[in-house]
Image 1 (cartoon, rainbow, N blue to C red):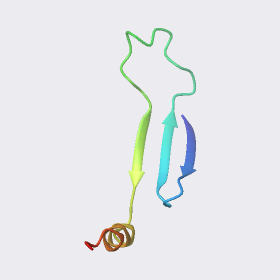
Image 2 (spheres, helix red, strand yellow; image 1 turned 180 degrees about the vertical axis):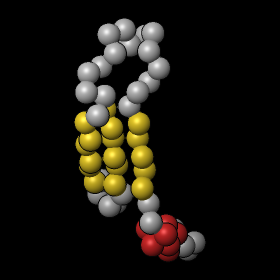
Image 3 (cartoon, one colour; image 1 turned 90 degrees about the vertical axis):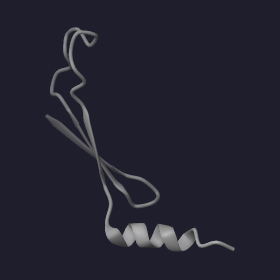
Image 4 (cartoon, rainbow, N blue to C red; image 1 turned 120 degrees about the horizontal axis):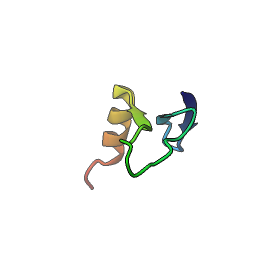
Length: 54
């Protein structure tokens, strides 16, 4: 598995794991790439505070 980490401007970490070799027939194989979205409670609180009504 290859591991690719990218951080977006909002400081959320995107971790994508890709198979070393893609399946020979993508239409016959189940999706093998996974995407994990990692967030911290502090990030949630910061986002909510930015959305305060007014």
